[in-house]
Image (cartoon, rainbow, N blue to C red; front, side, top):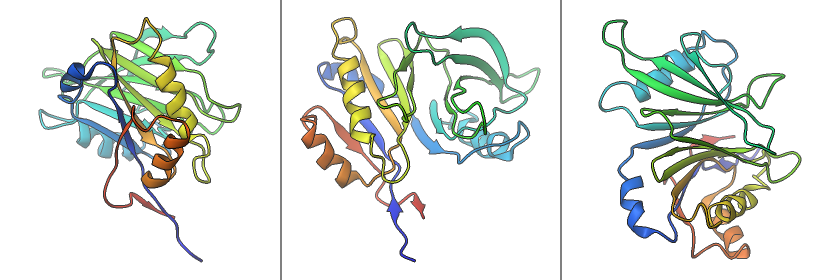
Length: 228
């Protein structure tokens, strides 16, 4: 059986306010499809994710697709965000990567969109507490939402396009771009990272159809991140 190669992309968009891109690029950002974590004791969070985040060399922001269940050591803060008219809540957690005496806190913003199998949830882990939390409506009935956090004037969002080639990938970029073109949002720089389920060159072609090629810069790995 022929194997198809898929790239998991990081999408970077810094239109309109190019001076702010220098700020947004100061952050160390990573995106990872965790492929589900079925239990709060799951080693993917407690070992792999922890290693990516820990210490001064850890990433500042980790965007997680198929986040599964959060580790049992993640503590809800009581901050619950549910934007009007969207109906998709985000919950904030703290996660101490250090010890009781020497704490090393990260903030987790968790969207429990898969209430059944609890596999394809979305999460963003941040070194800083978010000033604002964003939820953009899914592009189709079957699509997942786009979630994000704001740190000052910089916004970091994550998404997970549909399987079988990411048929909603270009629409996700269009919806996000339109959201940040509104007058009240145009002062913000934003980065959209996630699993788009299609090769970079195909997505670039799709963005030309959407007339977004001059507004969007795709930053993608040079090697496939998944073989399947």
